Length: 57
Length: 139
Image (cartoon, rainbow over all chains, first blue to last red; front, side, top):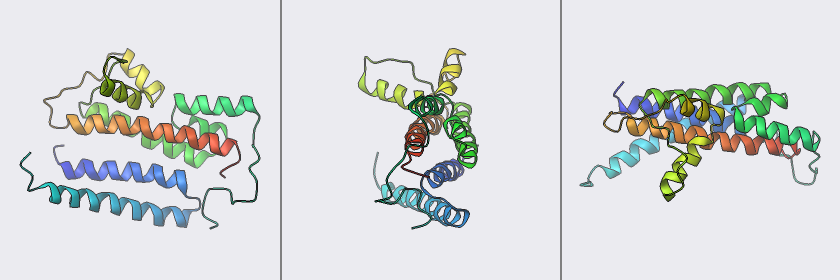
């Protein structure tokens, strides 16, 4: 699969899952924190990509 | 915060196991992701860590990532090796089996390397987590 965005989402999902279980306890808190972390990973990765877009290298 | 895993200040941290079991759990965690948590009977975390870190490592290999040799002659090569070796037996079995030659021309080479590095680094955090739980600093 050659889509960068797909692997970005897979990476974000797995890392968010591990961080969530390392730091939170309780299903409700884990779900909230996981969704927040996952969204931050994906959003800021795309944002960083756009910010780097004008760079010539 | 009731949902925070950290033991509250003032409660005092009491080890939940003896030194031998703490050491054994940390070694188990370093060798196999999640095994240290299983030794401490934290089954949900054990399953998640084994599944997530194991999957990251396998995906990294399937994306043509490279397993770096134990080479300490160059600083960055040593860092790459240390990060990957954090996965424990996953790294050593695959490395000894000749897997992970890596293909730098592959479209997914960088992603593959990243997945393998991060799998090892996350497992290092998992080992620290096992130590904290065993020492009674976390639930």
